[in-house]
Image (tube, rainbow over all chains, first blue to last red; front, side):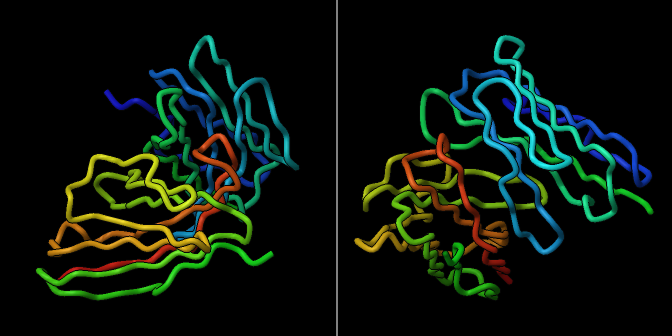
Length: 109
Length: 114
């Protein structure tokens, strides 16, 4: 079992829909990161969380430390949101990031 | 501020050769981490350097090595290349040590081993 699991693996939505991507982890962590990767490889850090909730524009990230679960929400989705979204955790035992397999999001106009 | 830069962006090498990739972090950042991304294994941590010292290392063979210079620029080296080393190699810099600080990723170096 992977230490970081994301669901769904693939997600197709219509423009304007509310989207949720989930991330579960099995280890103790000091922080959780949500990353966005566009075709071509560039990765952008969206959020870094150690508790609670963060919001940036149409993106919202939440984390429940007790349940070892995080969600990334996109409100009013747009075709430019199409990308791979990756959850990564930093374990309390060290400074390395462990990544989920990613969620391929496609938003159709 | 300029972002994280990586050179070269694309590289084609032959099995058995060695390769050196370079990463220049954001000015003022002292931590540089390296990652390998392949279709089969996804993103995997290679190593992290902070103030010229390797602070953490992933589960990769000794053919993978790195170093960091006094100006925080970092290089990684892969010796005796294998076909399976074909991947996107990403580096990320942060202002502090480890992932607790937000990491800023470079565009990556796409290595193809033939």
